[in-house]
Length: 351
Image 1: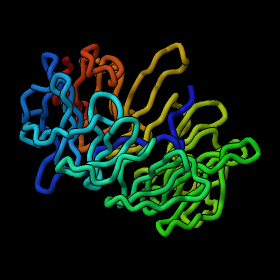
Image 2: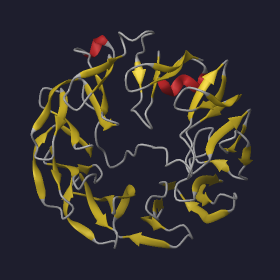
Image 3: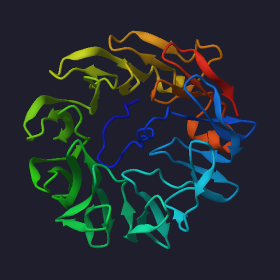
Image 4: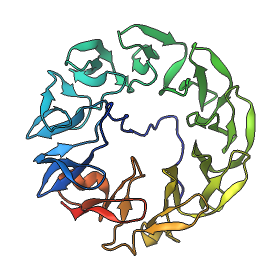
């Protein structure tokens, strides 16, 4: 099994920072309804929604019946946009004061009042990040600001929004091979074209060249040789990489293997822990666990009481865990709960 690592087409949807002065809240399910608890597992918003996600910028996408909207941290639905969700049954999270919505077959952005601040003219749209969002239509792709001002990027066919001052773009195909590149915040292309890339984090970005992955710095200079079958973004000083044998571990910024490649899959570090898969064979099924920066197993799903088979990365001190795929929790097919960094349940498995 190969590791889930970096791709210019994939962006992890992370919850934005909590509103000023507020503590993070976590969506939980009880009796088929969704509510929110704090980090200690205390109920803050009693379960009342049919679907709910994490808060971002003080608002959380929720759904009651067929009506999607946004709730504040008291659980009150304070915004019901007059536009359809951009995908699925929930609206996208707010990021940079804007959220993607659908109007007919096109995408635009609303502000926190529900006003369409950026007209719906796009076929695809990334969330805002660092003041800009990548958008695409039939003519190509570019970046739009929160007021709707658009800058076309020559030859761009996709990519990601800015992160740490640098965005990635997919270029028009050349010689039947995919090409990707990086843009700085001025819109200038950083030297170097690749077969694939991740995002810049901690000053380095994973890139694929001639079939293998390595790392370049912010000037496009190679710093870690292309030696890996797959490579992820740096987080907390380490990055997940997959070797020829198909097992993954973690390298430090010098390219040294700091945690041996002995896992079936590897996620980024968050809060000093990383989610890994301990299974030996593809037929074993996932055996999720969390390891520390020395590679020591801190939490094992199969020995937890009760055991869990699936987990998310840690965020704000807790990780969601479940006895089935977490994406099925909203359909009532999976029990979910939360564990802290010691593996203690702060919210028990339930649905």
